[in-house]
Length: 443
Image 1 (cartoon, rainbow, N blue to C red):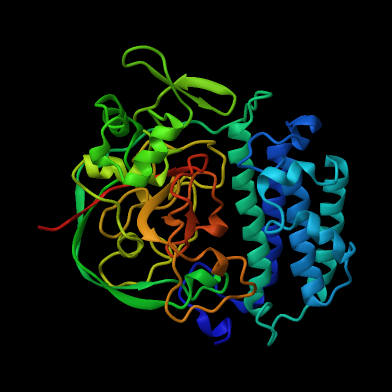
Image 2 (cartoon, rainbow, N blue to C red):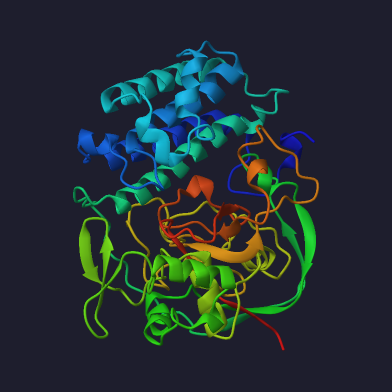
């Protein structure tokens, strides 16, 4: 099936405008990454701040190399570098904890490389046909892939900056929005079919093919679990009680000596702070909890007498139970600040209820933005999956080792957020901007 044949309703669909959109999204991603890294000293750009993350400068050149491979060489344009250069910035050849040992470009050279690639891409984009039989070019798919890739790395950069302790990183953030009134209850989601996945021109291969599955009726929290909610679990001894934990999770917990979420700082009885980038501040109890692993989310859900939703249930709630096809919980209009906390400007989650225009047709709040939401589902292919345009984006990660996350976080870009978007990670990961909400069977 061609990429063009896989379209569905969404916020944009004119074939004539894909070039304009492609350039806009590429430039938005580049402006964001430059702004994020501009305050960081060059020595810290080269340093490995955590074995979980690459040196920041590796990401800069990796993004440029990925763009060169897909928007120049794959589309018939001359190469900027020798293909042998690709090996240094191959994410599959070199684990993150080894990348600081590679002969990396220094910051000035890395940015110069990125600029040369972008200038060549702009020139090549102008001569590409508006319509093509090449599936890479159908509705600008490969440009969307590269723009999303850079924005996903911007989110990775934010996670690295949060882990950085050698220097203080003090981002300029937007004003904290005022929380709205959010129901403190569960929302009933009727059972029935849900169309999982997307036919959007820029959707990834793991979102395809769009297909229907049946979901039994269930109850879903009206908003993500908050820091205040989770604090009760911590202070009630939840981390010491094996009853709530997956056995592998409790073994991991004991081995690591964990007693609370990452970046929380206990300061006496019932006094908690958190470190957020370069600031230590009181724990905000009205925000969605973040930096919790799948094991921690699963344990809380058990303690609360609930469970994590499946990804099919999550997508059913995001689409709404009325059968209307929606790209986002609120409809098909592209995300704005009124709908969701996305794009990185806030540098953290908003209080729950801050974006009432983003609630779903069934009245569920905050499904997109603020924090990624862990689900109970393993990352598996949909029936009929076909890798495109390369196996290493999705296929090599399928299995039982990773759990699916949905919804996007405050650091996720709107271009990479939709009801059907599937993220995944190991159940022990805590540096990502992940939280969760709970579900419950209807009895």
